[in-house]
Image (cartoon, rainbow, N blue to C red; front, top):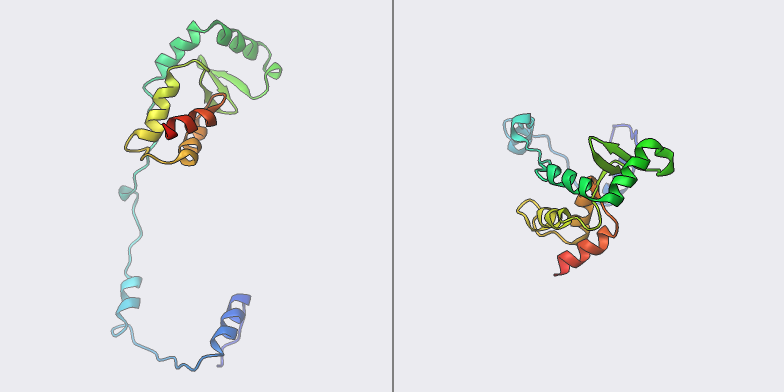
Length: 155
């Protein structure tokens, strides 16, 4: 062996290969079909990629439920007047956010809609508790979300 070992990875594999008896035989590109096929692999273009993002048709319904909930209106007013009084909360375009996630009120029927969309729809794929909860947590927040997801998935 005449090549200089330069990396720890090479050192590791050298130690493994020294225990074997082998011979390295060069194959020209025309005879080495596997290497030839790999060298001709094209990069994936953006036309082949599909990105799925939630399309939320329920936003207007959620805004209406925010307007109907007196307690929530009071909270939104306090957040707008003094953001430091409720850390983590923001009001953006008449919607309440908690740590960047859309806040869903405790008694909102939207929760059931979201649970069905994120678990029972073809995109949800009937994932388990952890995956459904993880996908929900990327976008929305409500109190006792884990309990609701667990109950919904186990039902």
